[in-house]
Image: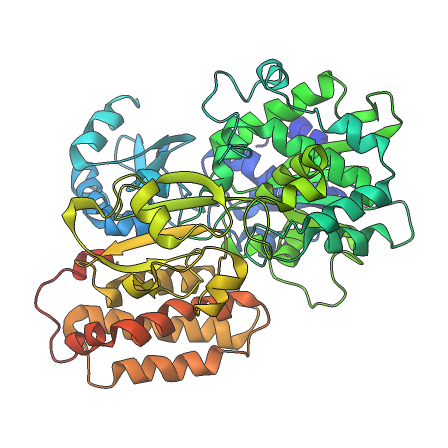
Length: 154
Length: 425
């Protein structure tokens, strides 16, 4: 299930640390980027590769809020709902996305293109309200601006 | 004031090593390497530089603790897990001047005797992580990282490590746990990381802005550095201003600039022609202040005297249309989400606080809710394993202290204006 190329990347990452276990979170990130979400099986394979007891690896993985455990859209939209963004309309944007995409938070659209989630402060408060689409960030959002932005993603 | 930390920000290709070198990057290495490591530690101690992550611990002292532990395996960690709500100051350095950070890390590593460093960056900064990784690779190519740096026999390896979404990892012992591949839960202190940190070895954890200030301590000398800002907290400081101001953004100002100067002179005043209601001066975990505090100086000492903290320098401004119950609720939702679960007062207490806020915002507020919230805060205050719980209650305590009237409006069906409803999920 995990390709040799990905295993190689994980091994190279592990070489950066005095103990291989330190590569656990980066390795899970690599896998999530590759597969879209994590599962018990993927965590188990990584644990084996890095010589970490599987329950401990799962315990660590489940701690971090940006790991996903169910299928997401090809493009994951993270809308910040912390204070600066809330003051400037984050909830309106979340309502808009729910209506526009026709799915609840965290669920992929039928065509698999998008899913959207709330996120805590993404450090773009000077451009509030803001969001991330994958690695791309967008600031000073309005529902209209979101419509335009999402057109760029196929 | 002359821009130091943000000097190269906004200049063409400033994150690229060629452009950065032309603009003076890595110039502090030669003079630093001419000093003995212990003298670099001494210089930083003398400069009065204090940590810019929130706690304000004297940087030179932290270095000295680590430098004086015998042994050759030591680590330098850069805390780039900028997660305190309202904070985005380090983003400017990571995005536009990663070489300033790397330069500061090389000097710091030389001073404390570390040959390996990691930059722990939050996953919410994916673009910044890419910029940083590229900058590290460029620094290796030009011989600023790796072995025998500048031919002076200094060795320092540096790698970028990305988190996966956890505010608590900004706490230094939780950051170390996370780096080691574990749940990001804080460790008992002592031993402090400087004595026993990453992989049980002596470790210094410094904030991005702290490390970025280090080259200036070398080039200006401690004496020159001290001339900037306030005597008790010298140096330049980054302020990240957001919320109800006309010009939100990152500002580099001397320590001791007043809140009034920051909001009205630099940020163009309150947006929409409204009036200032409340301001959080140092990130979500620092107590709110009001329009009565505008003449407070933004430095470690003055903000404590005013009943708050400098924290990370993240200033969130709220105008008179803001319901403070709703604002506090947003922050409590955050702390509840981010409580690591290790200790009961924080894990359960933040959940109870959030339940009360949710009920209030659902139009089911009761007389005495403010006092109920204060009682829950009392069960948290001074009883938590790490500073998260203590920080979590600050928005509650300060909003009740200054804006109890907003809480009273929630009792008996709410204020009817629905201004708060859209702010909480």
